[in-house]
Image (cartoon, rainbow, N blue to C red; front, side, top):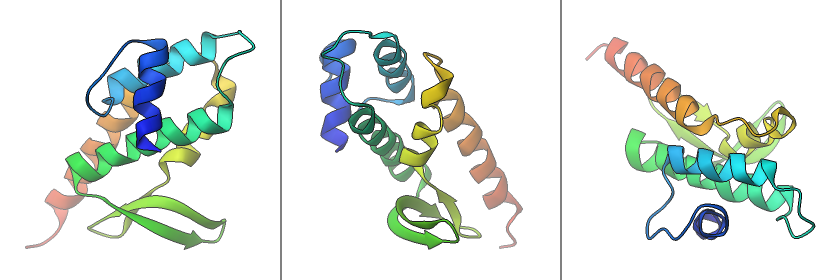
Length: 126
């Protein structure tokens, strides 16, 4: 699915050899949300592709790991980190923004997540 993020980036922004970073995900999201053509990719495909790319940045840059997570809302693919079993559901977080229209959110969401995770890790006793 992460390959889907690169394909969407190529379609809307241009070729990319690496995983789109959060700013690049924002560019794809805004252009896709603004696309009114009948050939526009399906929302489920876009939500999953971009959400999983975002999640991979949590894994690669913040030390999360992928997991199948079950909570009171059901079972879903997500990311988990320590301390305190920090959990995130990247595809779900992306889907919740479908109704917001062409507004970027990935870069800001990543920055806020990074700050919160670093704060939690700093506050943990050694």
